[in-house]
Length: 284
Image 1: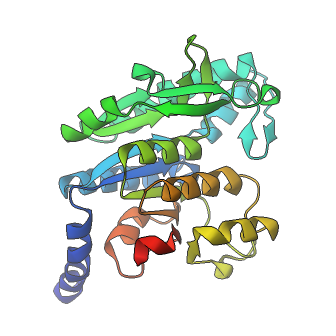
Image 2 (image 1 turned 180 degrees about the vertical axis):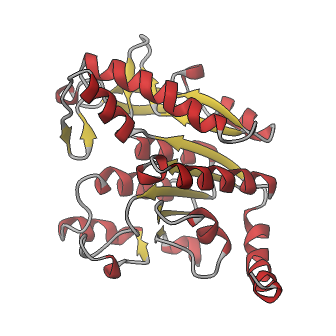
């Protein structure tokens, strides 16, 4: 990179660095960026960079591919309904082992001493009830206790949260990672909620990435659902984002986790990345 280009990039990034300094950002991490080691290393390095720049970063992760792989190994078939994993006793045991175990600790190891691994059961952070008996042990979050998360952020750490919650009796629940990230963002009064995916953002035609919708005002979401543009796994993802924005999170964005450094591009460049969701009153 030429000196002039580097200077231009720093100049462009400066106001955004100032904007996010001291603010909280919740990143939902999933998709191909969790599978590809090069992308995974890039994401973790970017999160450390954000922390060094004064951004308070919380990483909330799923682990669908790793869960699918383990379920296949032990001969348990996967089933989904409206983008949510049907979770019987055997599946719940695997989900807990994979998410709170290997996936979580692998991410912590890549954060170079900045990460602290947690799951939603720690300190009863994610208190749940059963969402739907037909889904099994899938939890609906009824309360987020952000005390532990806030303490870690105050200490300069990156909380790395596996989305396994529990009820008052100690029953573990599988919680959709997008929903959990949104509820955590609300509890922390976060500035921004970022969701990493395997696509460029919200597309008018799911098979054509040139149909990217760059911005969506939250009142438009129901129309996109009726048109079938928001469907499947996008329903809980964007539903959580809408809840977060209506409850005080300034904005939410879906970014392409296949693009190296997509988080930095979204935060620190004029063009941003992916699809941004906002509420008109926040811009007035």
